[in-house]
Image (cartoon, rainbow, N blue to C red; front, side):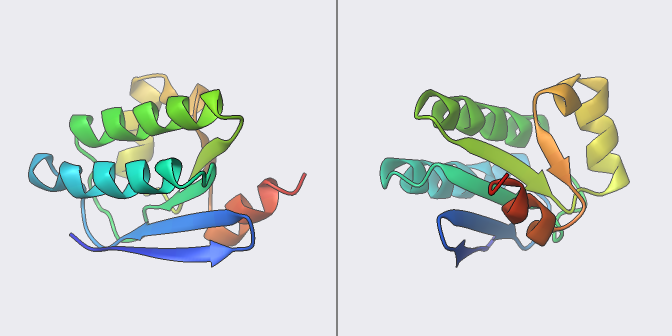
Length: 112
């Protein structure tokens, strides 16, 4: 799995190029940890390239969101397909994670 990073001023977007499965979760964890370690605490995770998100992937995203919140920032999701949305909804995470239709909307939401 490859993750590309795009800077939108003081917001960073991470785009995953495929589904987040158990075997590639460490790549996502390492990339998020590196950004947080660099003090980048406004992050959008772009899931447009992912058709599936494993439970470990969900755990990594929630952990990163909590770490970022402790530092005064936020993590948001963008381009979530229906399958992933249903998983987040069933686990009640749609109430904890802000989800946007597009990366641009998610990035702009940091400005308000």
